[in-house]
Image 1 (cartoon, rainbow, N blue to C red):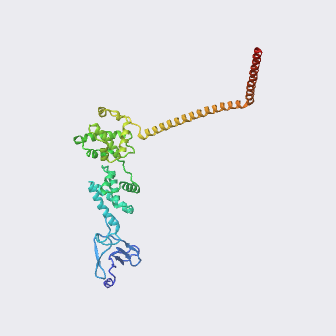
Image 2 (tube, rainbow, N blue to C red; image 1 turned 90 degrees about the horizontal axis):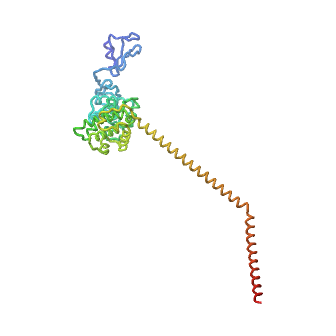
Image 3 (cartoon, rainbow, N blue to C red; image 1 turned 30 degrees about the horizontal axis):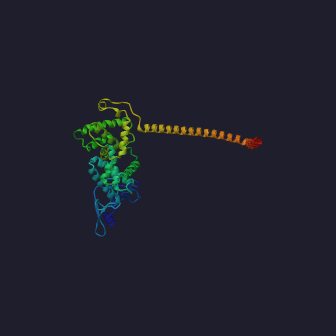
Length: 390
C-alpha cells in the first residue's frame, strides 16, 4: 500500500475510512487544486469545488510556487485568474473597487453617513451585476445610487448637488438615475419640499429670525399641499415661493433674483408659483389673520382652473366667430337685395326704349313747328309794316 501511494501523482490521495456512496469502494481520488473527490472504482463524484479558509501553495516543475485553488471574494464574484487578493484581479473587481472608492469620495463631500455609503455600495454592486455600468461613466452611476439612498432616507439633498460635486451635466445624471430606477423597478417616495426650507433659509441671511421665517415658510408649504399647488411641482420652486412670501411677511426685503440664485430655479417658475398662490383664499389674509385663522377648505388645483379658463376663452372666441359670421351673412343678404333692386330698375329701363325715341321725335317736331310758326309771325309783321308804310 505504501509503495502504491508513492508511485501515484501528488494530486491523488486515498482517504482512509471513507467509502463511495454508490459502490462502497474506499479508493477515493482527491485533487486539492480543483477541490474534487472522485471514486476510482465507479467514477462517482463525491465532492466538487470544495472551499477552504486557508491558502495553500504548490511547487511546479520549474521550482516556482503557486496558489492552490481559486480566490472567491466576499461579494460572490469569483475571480477567473486565480491568485490571492492584490496580485491579480479581473476587470469587474477593479470596477467594483473603483466604484466603492468613488462612493466614499462623493459621500464625504456631501457629508453623508456610513449608512448611506453601505446602501449605495449595494446598489452599485447590483448595477455591475446587471451590466448597467457598461457604456456609462462610473461617477454617474455612483451619483444615481447615492441619490436613490437619499430619496429613501428623505435627506435634504437634490440631484443638482451631486452634479455640482461631480462637475457633470445635470440632465445626463438625471437620465442615468431614471433608467436605473426603472431597471430595478424601484418605487421611491415623492420629495417633500419642507425638507429643504431650513437649508435655503440659512443661506438667505435672515439672522436671528431665520427660524421664524422658516416656520412661516413651512406653514405656507402646508397650504400649498392643501390647495393642490404642490402636486406635480418641483420642490425648489415651492421652497423659493414660500421663502419669498415668508421674508416679506417678516419685513425682509428679498428680491426674486436673490431667491432664484439660492434655490436655483427659473424666475418664470417662481412667478408662476406666486401667481398660483395669489388665487387662493390664504393669499387674501392679513398677517394677524394668517397666524390665527386656519382655512380648512381646499382650493381648486391650478391645472383645473387653467382648464376652465381656457374653456371660457374658447367659448368667447366661438361666440365672437359666430357673431362675425352672422354679421357677414346679414351684409351678404342686404347686398343681394340691393343688387336685385338695381337689376329690376335696369330691366324697366330696357323694356321701354321706343317711348324715349318718340318723345325725342315729338320734341323735335315741336321745335320745328314752333320755329315755322315763329317764322310765319315775322312775315305777317313785315307785311303789316309794309301796309302801314304804304
